[in-house]
Image (cartoon, rainbow, N blue to C red):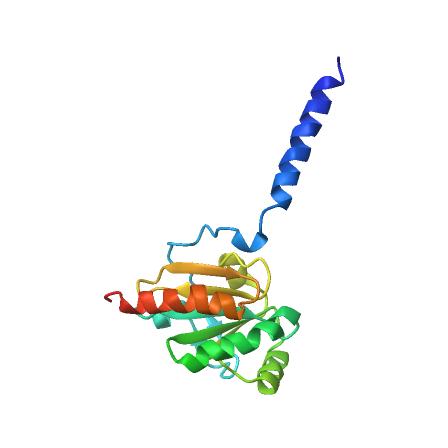
Length: 176
């Protein structure tokens, strides 16, 4: 009898764990969706004497793509982000996350630079404020300064064509 309660609790935990394993981690909702983007001011990668803040794009639809030179998935995603940049729909800001600036510059020189600009988040504090779990992650920002969408993991062609581009086009149609 005295083992029934612990056994019952263990059984419930096993069921909850099994249910959790069936969930897609890329579908984790961000508590920041619909909220004002967390403020930060960081140096720009290619112009360290100039800073970037999300306030610079207030009133515009834009994309924040969190990446790093050490990130293998970022390399796979890079051609898709470059394709988005070539569409010239919106500005794309890179957030070089926990990466040495020299490494980030070298990586962009090697693979191409799709970003309007990149900010350097060497210590990862801005990324933490934005709820970044890991790189890459991509945020869609509305004209109102609110986060409209968060894509966890590498953006692939399907996500770009079916989620991101349609959302950007919708947001661009909204009044300022």
